[in-house]
Amino acid sequence: MVINKMKNKLSLCTVLFCAFVATFTSCNKKQDGGAETGQETVVMPSFDADSAFNFVKAQTDFGPRVPNSEAHEKCATFLYETLSRYCDTVVLQHFDSKSYDGKTLHGTNIIGSFSPEKSRRVVLSSHWDSRHVADHDADVNNHTRPIDGANDGASGVGVLLELARQLSMKNPEIGVDIVLFDLEDYGTPEGIDAPEGEWWGLGSQYWAQNPHRENFTAEYGILLDMVGASDARFRYEYFSAYYAQDILSKVWGAASQLGFGHYFVSEKSNPITDDHYYVNTLGRVRMIDIIHQDDYTGTGFPATWHTLNDNIEHIDKNTLSVVGKTLSHVIYSE
Image (cartoon, rainbow, N blue to C red; front, side, top):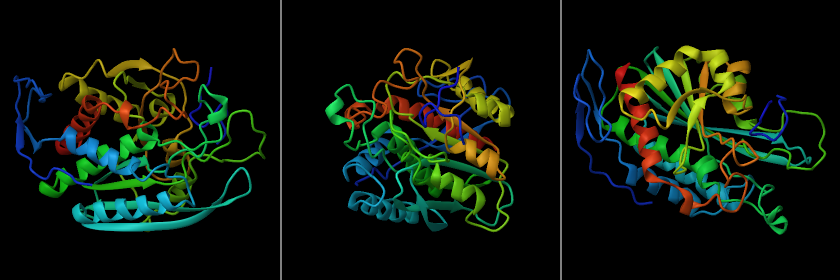
């Protein structure tokens, strides 16, 4: 059985600034998710879930970030200005893509880099656009309405913006590129016939073939998608395991050390044609996907997926914290 986030086709702003530095030591498991490394001490800024949540809300406050809309343009400016406060360099990668319905979509990938001179690099990514139709809403009258995309898009971006704030306070040993993909979610709606083509993940397709730096590569990448629900469970997504099993083991191992094993579950799950698929197949970076799948909703994803209920009311700070602390531990352990 193949479940596809891109729908049943396997084809291809006020933020809290105060923080303290937390030290995680061997044989000492902290109540706030401290690391139990067994050998080394990992020192990093403390991930602030309230700050991450505020970053999520700042995006949804613009309204649906549908390509070619005013909300989309305003959010792009917000993301650029926010990353510019924290990153050493920020690149706006403008591109145009044709959609399944023949429209020309104006996209912008937003890339913030830390220590761009370092050869050892890790890519952290999420998509920042939101779906133009609520084609899985229970009310058929809502099927042509756009969604806020609080979980499907904004949650991952919110975690990465908070992580960027941390990285600006204490640089890790490796270089980090935060890549916010555009035009991920403007794929063929449920029940609509469309020409054959790769209509999903348009921004990641473009970046994979046209990276922001010539001959860019990285040791690995981590994609975040739908990381804000209270009942989130992250399993070994098929393509992630196929292309980068060692990175899955690294990340899930860090989550286990932090006591987050009930979120990061050591079980195999279905293939998802998400942004990481195109990075793996078209680019030069092995990338995994931290994505919430659900076997009990009928879609394979959270109940709010591609519905009007994907709003800020369904974002859980605890889940943002779990994902953020796990990523932080992975990066600062390199």
